[in-house]
Length: 264
Image 1 (cartoon, rainbow, N blue to C red):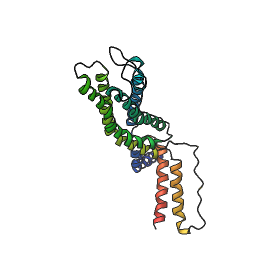
Image 2: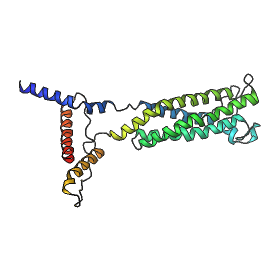
Image 3: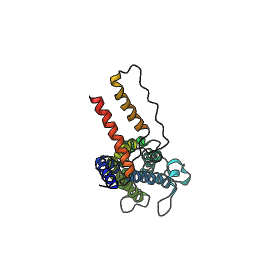
Image 4: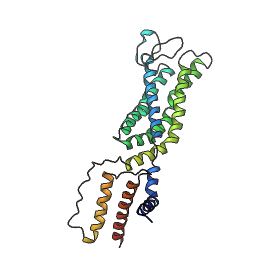
């Protein structure tokens, strides 16, 4: 066997022994669920602005924010409790702000890697239950307006449009959160574990107390190594990066030897 053949065989051994590490790299969850939820939060945030300023009645009307917060100069029902439609607008603004706008802000922080866990926690609880329960309120007020005031056939106000839009945001948003929240939780967990590789990263100095027994020093050194890898993760190897796989395999082999010494 030539030296080159021996090297190829050694690399194959390293590849075989390092399958677990490659699998770890491969199984990292994709970010697409987080992106989908973030874009949906952006759409609902945009709806706050649209529903605040845009009149959706075909025959024309006073812009919604004037109907809810204005006066009676336009000879219309004004105030939050003046009509079911006004109540629908106002409740929608409050709920979309609390659920979607804040979620969108946390999404931006997650993209910037400032705070991933905050976005995950908000989406898992407020995002999910806010869509499933709170977003029922706006379209319920619209249904009450149709049943009690205008009727389904003769309605000429914003009822049908508001019912369709709020119904879509409620149903689609709830389904998206139900199916994507578990994936986002996996992504957030993986993101906190798989930090980007930084060749200039410096670990904290390993300090072992003078009161540590000599027999416990190897255990303390391993703890220092684990802490360093948390602060400055090693390079994650691509499947075809033989040299990186070899180095990583050797590093893990050395760590296993240290653990064997501790267990003796």
